[in-house]
Amino acid sequence: MYDQLTINFGQLDYELFAPEIESYCDILLNRIDPIFEGVDAEQERAAEAFMSAAETWYGDDYQGAAEAAYEHARDTAVQFMEMRAVFMATGASGLFHLFEKQIYRHINSELKRWLKAPITKWQDLEKLIPKFDRKHGEPEPCIDLINAFRDSDLQELRLVANVVKHGDDGPSYRQLVENRAVVVSQDRLNDDWTAGEYSVLRANVSVQTQDAKRYQAALLRFWRLEGTFWAPRSAFP
Image (cartoon, rainbow, N blue to C red; front, side):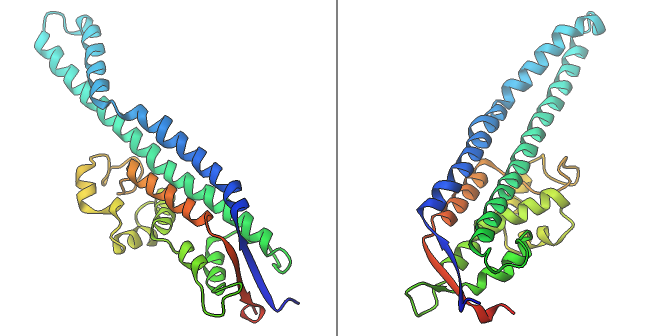
């Protein structure tokens, strides 16, 4: 058996995994999100379309038609923004699962000589990575890998992904609240009328463009790690 186990990170890993993250976020932030920027124009379009068809229903009752058009346009705007909320939150969730797939692939490749079974659960990573608290050539603890794994934005992304999947009545949502994450802050939720008890996401969470950018930056920071991190074989029963 080996006296020590090692996990390596380098430029080749960044070149392998970073483009996937950047491509995913490009689609989410630069192609999907801009669709929902023109809510006022969408509301006007819905009102005009309603008024064009209203002559058949309302005849000479212009005021009645105008009031109905306003209600229809408002409901359309709500749906428009609810759809944006769905895409941003599920987009963030998908970004985490992309990273999750990447890190499983990397860790399983690095430790394939001793793993009895591939790592497939995040909880197993949470137990494993803190054991790699040394860096090759440095006698003192060097917890770059541990800090990168515990990055606050990365962990927030993980919790958001869990909330999108399971709703806001579980431990992940409570952890977001305890961490005072901006995506569940009262100020954010008060400003986002697509969040709340009747959210189509079933979760009182508000993920915005700037949050997705934070999450992207956190994942890229992780893959910029360089070095060989090791743990003594004795740390693994």
